[in-house]
Length: 493
Ligand SMILES: Nc1nc2c(ncn2[C@@H]2O[C@H](COP(=O)(O)OP(=O)(O)OP(=O)(O)O)[C@@H](O)[C@H]2O)c(=O)[nH]1
Ligand SMILES: [Mg+2]
Image (cartoon, rainbow, N blue to C red; front, side, top):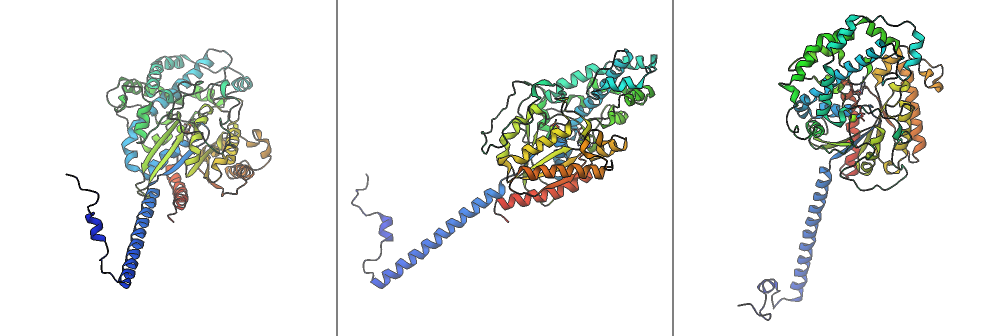
C-alpha cells in the first residue's frame, strides 16, 4: 500500500531543526550549513576543473604536414615515427619491402624505355626526367654505340615489366605515378585562403577528375596505411612478396643484369647527354641492387626513408610518443597528398591543428611539376606558401617551414647547375648551397611577412629528411615548440 501525502517524509523529518531551537542556536546552525555548502560547492568546482584539465591534457597534439608532391612530407612523418615511436616503426618496417622493390623495378624499366627510344633512332621524346630532351640531344651529335649486348640485356630484363604491373596492382593507386597535365593547370590550392570558416569534415573525399584518389584514414600507423592501399583480400597479411613469392625470384634473377645496365658506359653516356641524374630521383635503389634483389630481403631504416610511395588523399597517423620530452603524449600527424588534384582535401583540417610543418624542397629550382610541365616546382612552392601564410583560418597557427632536399641542392650545384639560369633574380651571387639556401629562405620569409598582418614567428629549418640523424635533431626543436604551444593553449603551463 502507498504512503499518503500527509505522512511526513522520513528524510526531511531527520533534517528538520529541533522544535526547541533558540534563535542563537538557529543562527549558528544556519551558518554551519552555509559553510558546508560552500565547501561542497568548492569541491564540485575543483572536480570540474580537474576533469576539464584532464580532458585538455588528453587532447592529442595535431600536426598537419603540407607541401607539394615529392616535397618530403611522408618522409618527415617516417622520421617522427623512427625518432619517437621506434617500436611501432620496427614492427612496420617490413611492410615497405614491396614498395622498395617496385621503386627499383620501375627505375630499371624507365631506363630500358630510354634505351629503346635511343636505339630506335627516333627523335628523343620528353620523359618525366627531361622535358627538353630534343634540344639537349641535338646539341650532342653522333648516335650512341649500342651493341648486341644492350639488346640482350633489354631482352633478359623484359620480365620486369610484368613484375612492375603486378606490384602496382598490389599496392594500389598510390603506387602509380601521376603525370597528367591539363586538368589542374590553373589550380594551385583548391580553397579560398580568405575564408574564415570551414566546411565540416567529409568522411570521404571523392575526386571526380581522378577517381583513383580517395580519402584514407589510418589510426594505427604504417602497416594499416599500407594495408588500406592494398586491394581487398590482401589486407591484414604480410606483403605476399615477403616469403614465397615468385616475383622475388624474378627480381633476384635479374640482379646481375640490372647492375650491368646501370654500370654500362653507353648507358651512362646516354644519361649524361640527356642530363638525367637517376641517382637524384625519388626511390632510387640501383646502387643497392645486390642487397635488395634477393630472396628474404629486409629493408633497412635508410631504405624505408628513401622509399617512394605517393600519398593519396589524407592519411591520419596516430602514435603515442615513446621517447623524449613529449613521452606519453598522443600525437596525430596528418599526411596529405601534395599533387594539385589532392590539395582540396587539405582545407577541412585547417581549423583544428596545433601546428603545420610546411615542406618546400629547394633543390628543384630547375624542375617542373609532374602534373603541369609549365610550372616550375620552386614557384609552385612559393605560391602554396603564400596561400598557407595568408589563410585567415591559420592566422594563429604555428607554421614551421622545412627548406628540404638541401643534400640534393648541394649535389646539383656541385654538378654545375647554375641557379641564375633558372631564377634570374639570383644574379651573380656565389652559386653555393649556403648562399642559395639563404636567398630562397629570405623569399619565403618576405612572403610570410607580407601575407599575414598578425606578425607571427618565422620558424625555418634547412633539412635533408632522408638523413635520419640530422632530422632527429631538427625534430627535437620542432617537437618542443609544438608541445609548448599545445600546452599553453590548454592552459596547462
Ligand atoms: N635526397 C633526398 N631525398 C628526399 C628528401 N626528402 C624526401 N626525399 C625523397 O623524395 C621522395 C618523395 O618524398 P615523400 O616524402 O614521399 O614526398 P611527399 O611530400 O610525401 O609526396 P606526396 O605524397 O606525393 O605528396 C622520397 O623518395 C623521399 O625519400 C631529401 O631531403 N633528400
Ligand atoms: Mg606523401
